[in-house]
Amino acid sequence: MQATRTPNSPSRPERRPDTCYINKLEIKEPAVKPRGEGRRPQRKGGSPIVPDAGGPAAAFRQERILQPSAPSRVLRSSGVVQDGVTFDYLIVGAGFAGSVLAERLARDAGRRVLLIDRRRHVGGNAYDEHDAAGVLVHRYGPHIFHTNSREVLSYLSRFTEWRAYEHRVLASVDGKLVPIPINLDTVNSLYGWSLTPEELGEYFARQAEPVERIRTSEDVVVSKIGRTLYEKFFRGYTRKHWGLDPAQLDASVAGRIPVRTDRDDRYFTDEYQCMPLHGYTRLFENMLDHPNITLELGVDYRDVIGSLRVGEIVYTGPVDEFFEHRFGRLPYRSLRFEHETYEVAQHQPVAVINYPQDRPYTRVTEYKHLTGQSHPRTSVSYEYALAEGEPYYPIPRPENAALYARYKALADATPGVHFAGRLGTYRYYNMDQVVGQALATYAKLRGAPSWVHVA
Ligand code: FAD
Ligand code: UDP
Image 1 (cartoon, rainbow, N blue to C red):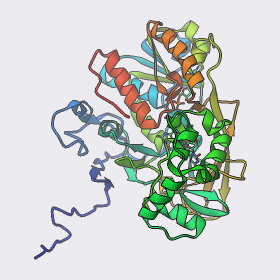
Image 2: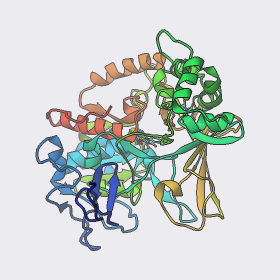
Image 3: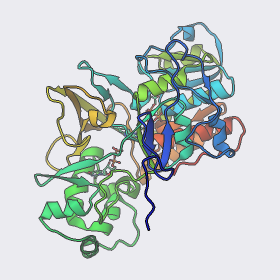
């Protein structure tokens, strides 16, 4: 006979409103201190998301630094850049790479850190802000946190609470909105079929073109699903986004998007998928709130390096720029965002709609889906790819890897300067990979064994 389960049965814990469930993992919100008390680091006995006692993650459990949900504040800006004060480290770039390293060096190693960014805000490309209508938007396009690394999640959980969020994307193809990654529902609704998963697998196999060695983004798609779906979903989007044909890009680019025969319509399948409850900017503010960190915004490395006395440098800007493009420019893809606010509560059914065919933009993002914000109006961004402008994407292809290898050799031979981040190491990395890389860089700086690995 089946045992009766009550809501309080240990095998089925009751959901409390202060608890966020990320797959099987339970993340409890910390007891938030009353306003005014929150500025000191809070020492806590152990984060509930890392239940085991030993192991390297223990290092991140000693304290949990969270602020009450106060409004965003401007971090220290002391003007010391001009004062000739000595710092142990100059960190260039206040995105994930630079901020994680600043936090670790300041809080864990007790070093005095000067963190600069040429933008007037922290967070790098993950920066979010309330727009004129009061809607929380990501200024540089949709940022969804997802990771398989418990260590990275555990580390970041010291600076933010989370809201569970699984990302779903639709593609506008042949006049229909269908799920991307391509799955059973995509093909059935596109063609008006009612295939089973097995039949779809057989269909893909019939369509697939054998490729001896998968090298390019074209290979990786046509070898799985054939040319027709490749043309509809991948070729146009990729040409728009990168200004290159998929055949000119490494397989790793389109290889980010899986193909499925079931009905799973999640964009990511990582074990942990969630959004910082009060946004990324708040996460960065909590991370950088330490007396050993001096933050200077609107300051370009090139304008101040001559007048600074610093021990070592961590550089997270474009590596070719650091070396004044000695070997030529590394190519980056840039973006332009058109932000709009509409007088309706909801504009589209999901956070992101991709436009692989006729529109001039690649995707449209409605931020309230990501943030969970309730608001009578809604804000969206239209994303246009550009050849020139701020560097957003390293472009993964063999000739760029070869050029980067020359810069990397130069970087390795430059004493006292450590390169990190998406631009500093010319890697098409997600946020969790950048955090993992920064933690590994910190371990190296401290001479400790590196244990953080994010695939
Ligand atoms: P950045 O965030 O680029 O920070 C580098 C900082 O260095 C910048 O703020 C820059 O101003 C500063 N800087 C550069 N040169 C100088 C200089 N000379 N002097 C002073 N400051 C300087 N990742 C995900 O995990 N999920 C997503 O959904 C996701 N979506 C994305 C969407 C878009 C449109 C983009 C572009 C990226 C997305 N990413 C996503 C990737 C994510 O943005 C990066 O992995 C991460 O933000 C990189 O952090 P970083 O510190 O290496 O670089
Ligand atoms: N891609 C595509 N069609 C899509 C979605 C993605 O062709 O509908 C390809 C395109 O080359 C894109 C890459 O897959 O640049 C990676 O997509 P992802 O959504 O991961 O890009 P990001 O969020 O990093 O811009």
